[in-house]
Image 1 (spheres, helix red, strand yellow):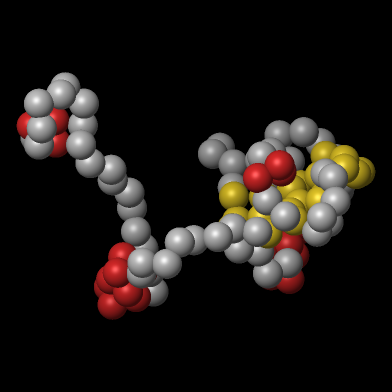
Image 2 (image 1 turned 60 degrees about the vertical axis):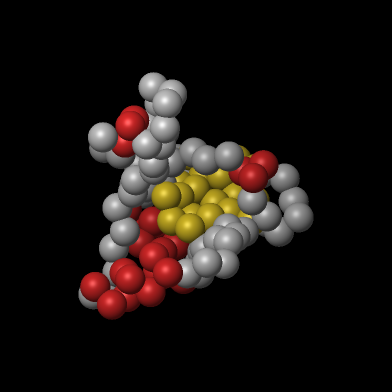
Length: 105
C-alpha cells in the first residue's frame, strides 16, 4: 500500500512507535514541530560520540568498559565496574541525559 503513493517501487512513508504517559501525552509529542536536539547521551552500548557534545556509556557486552566524554572534550575509555546494572541505573537517575540508549539483548 505505501509503495502505491507514487510511481517508484519504494515505500513512501516512515513509521515508528510513539509512547507517552497516556494517549494525550503521546498525541502532544506527535504534534510537536520543533527539532529534537540531542547533546547529552547515556548508554549501555557503544554510540557515535562524534555526534554529541557530552556522553558516557557502560558497555554491557565488554566487561569494565566505560566511555566518558566531557563537554567539548574527546571520548576516553575508563575502567568501569564488573557489573553494569547499578552503574546504568545510577546514570539514568542522576545524569540528566537527552537520550538513553540500551542494548538489544
